[in-house]
Length: 245
Image (cartoon, rainbow, N blue to C red; front, top):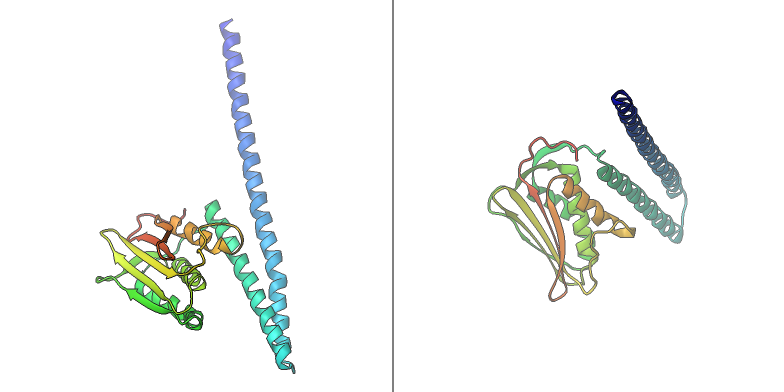
């Protein structure tokens, strides 16, 4: 009787192991299928958009009147926007699935902010926005993925400019704490700046949050009195053994 019980236990144990392995194989296969499908879908979306841009470049070299030239420029901007959205979706997917590898380097957060602000300066000038910038007294060097953090700062600045009323001020500050840097971006606008969302245009804020999370930082937004929108993110000064999140 004891031998029979041992045999039943052994068979049950082996079957449990088998079903666990089968489940893990199926789960892995499904994940690989999802990953392959996502990559293929985004590639198939990106390829025709690039072809459209090349075709529009050819058209621009032709003899176009002013109205046609403006139409081609508008279509090109729409195509570029589509490419940016595809890139953001792909990067968000990789961050959420743990496929994104950080390329860490040491750089000045203040210098990177100036670089990003110069890129949105034309849009800020259209609204006659004044920049009020408060830099930290000490060096603002941080160890992070520079390209990723530039994406975050650029997105937050674009968001702040886009939701600012005309002839207002854009407040930006960088504070140095004991073990982290904090960047704060404020704008005044009657329109409420969106919070983090993976839907529609807000995907750039969702991506920014994922990037900061991958660096073991924090990011949050607040709506203050007098129609002030505030976005804040922090980054640790040094990462220990951080390569993939």
